[in-house]
Length: 295
Image (cartoon, rainbow, N blue to C red):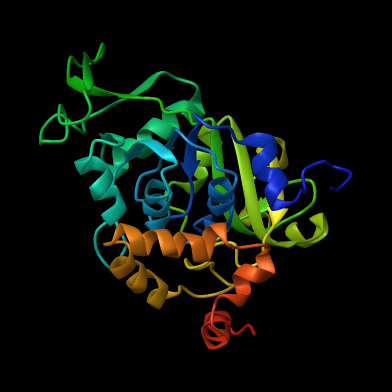
């Protein structure tokens, strides 16, 4: 641990700050998905979790398939660019999880309301269509200035945000660049922010591009350095997306037994970060790093 108390091991990051039954915002809009951080949550056998974000990734499906999730709050759920979320579909069919389906934009409004500290935000969304009253109920209000009927989009304040980013200093200032979706909004809406990063550098190094420091140290609870911590998703400037892994997951996750074997191999059987990296074929790993000219 550093003198600042922010830089810790991955296991301590979870052990000290995540509890069963909490609501977790999981960052990463196809990019910088915090797989390593969420996998550690599964290894520590946390359960009865609520997980939320706008557009989800296969990480949601993995957590559901592992039996760690009681409720999902989302705008989209699936395997981006590939297909459906099979463990999620089975869990819904078997009534094993609760579901709140919003829209991507309304989820972002929910986070923004929490970030602002207000109970709801007025909007024109969710007044028509079949989402309202399916798994959610949206209240309305008459605008006191115009009389227009508006939806009341309630604030959503997660207990903990899980984020992966490129770099940080030991004080906990987080450099994040590339597509963020609702990652920053959801993180700043949350009570705690836990971050894994590819590199820990000096504050002077971060100050060379201050516009990319998206999460300030005073909001970050703790962080851990985790090499390729977003694999199989990609990290801008660091490594590419493991498309084969996503395609393979679509086939594997259709069968509960095969999914259990997958989780044993990629999550529960992992003894260290190096052990995880060694499970990625060397040629694949080299190609992912070479995507941005790294090796």
